[in-house]
Amino acid sequence: MAGSNGTIAPLQNVALCIKALERAIKRPQYLPGMVCFYGPSGWGKTFAACFTANKYKAFYVECRSTWTRKAILKAICKEMGIAAARTIYDMTDQIIEHLRMTGQPLLIDEMDHIVEKQAVNIIRDLYDGSGVPILLIGEERIPVKLKKWERFHGRILDWVPAQPADIEDARVLMQFYCKKVQVGDDLLDRIVSMARGSVRRIVVNLARVEEEALGMGVKKIGLKEWGKRPIWTGEAPARRLAA
Image (cartoon, rainbow, N blue to C red; front, side, top):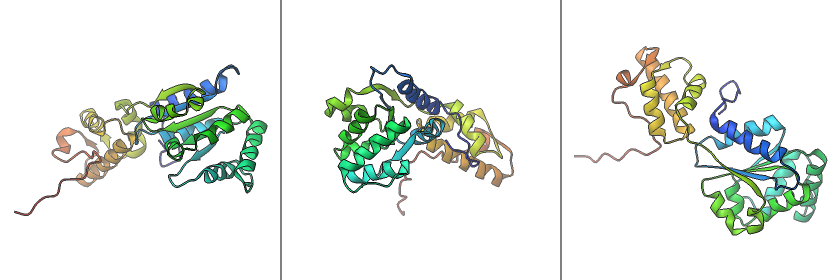
C-alpha cells in the first residue's frame, strides 16, 4: 500500500507477492516460470504487484476490460519503451526479443480481463518464446478460469493466494493514513473485522477515524469515543422511507 510520501507499507501481501516472483526467478530452468498471485478485490494485490515490479525492475502492465489482443501487446511494448509494430505477429516477436535481451520479469495485472477476452495464449507465447519469469495477478477465481487452457495452466509454477488484511496490517496502514490520531486496539480490531480482509476498506475507515477524532478535538480514540458511528463496509446505506 502506497503512503502519501510514496513509500510502500510492508503488508503481508507485499511479502507474498515478492516471494512468488522470487520463486520463479530462482527456479531451475527445467521448471515452468509463471506464477499466479490471486485474491478478492481490495486486498492490496495491485499495490503489492507494483512494489514487486519496482524491486525487480520488472515490466508491469495493468490490463483493461476494453483491451483487444492487439491492445495488450501495444501496452506491453509501451511499458518496455519500444515502438510497437503494426501487426500482432510482429509485436509478439518484438516483445519476446526484448524480454530475451533484458531478462527482466513481466508482471500482468488484472489477468481476468485477458481470460475474458480469450487471449491467454498471447501470454503463453511470450513466456514460451522468452523463458523469463512472468507473474500473473488476478481475482479469486482465476485458477479455476485458467483450467480451460490446459497448456497454459500447466506452465504455472505456483499459485499464491493473497491473504486478508489483519490487525498487524492495520497497524502498518495507520502509520500512513491516520498519522495524527492514535487508534485504540478495540476500534482497530472492529475495523479489521468489518473490512472482511479488504485493505481498501481499512484505509477508508482509518481516514474517517482521523477526520472524526480531529473534529472531536481528541488525539486518541477507541470504541468508547467512537460510539455509535458506523464502520464503512462498502455497502450502500438502506434508503429511509418517509413516514
